[in-house]
Length: 340
Image (cartoon, rainbow, N blue to C red; front, side):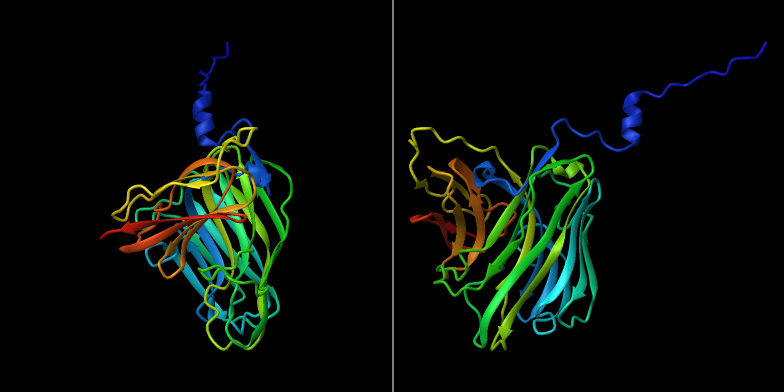
């Protein structure tokens, strides 16, 4: 009689741990959602840029949109602003669950860049900040600043062929091209262009447990000979963020446009909590400026009552700052002091 070999059964939970993560029910990603579906910003994370810094084009990956020595994980100098004028690049910004971010640029045509391919990564803790924090949204924008050095008559940033895909993620909608033209409109008092072209990718789940990739093509350039630095006036920017739920606006429009004082005030460089109210879903922006009018932080915000920490992920120098809320013709400003 043939002996029976013992059979071993592996619990289902162990099999799941050994393989790919289960897709959460309702793992849906909305591409370019309507503004009234974009909730308040709770926190910001990885930030990648293709930009002119002084007179050079840089490829940057940082731990937050506040780009400085303490947040830049990797930075590549791709060439000067003349060499990369009208250079066309294919890009991939991707995330691998449990590992981190990769941002790749590959030269396609135009310009005369010294390098034809470049990659920056964030795959381990940097200054105690982990690349694996939770987020549910991706923001991207093209921006040609409202002022240019003498000698430049036109400038633009154009992003096309945008596509998003993720393992286990279902997408709804389509991404549109981004285009911002330096149109010489009267600048805001912080010197930034008010009409940057922006769109979101919004998930109903935590994107940090999925593998995904955002791809496209970017080209930026100017006409003329720059008589000075173009510093930060031409850029393509992508960042991840955690958004809160959309706050419904009462049908009777009972909410009034309002900006409350910052708390605490003064602050010692930590939290800068701002509470504000927007009565409609029209485009609106909350900004943190220094006393010289330079923009330190900027958030696109939606209708409802919100509380936002403008100090999140930033090390603010001591001094006086302005917080400005703008929606259409409505503007409110309040001040906050930051102490050592």
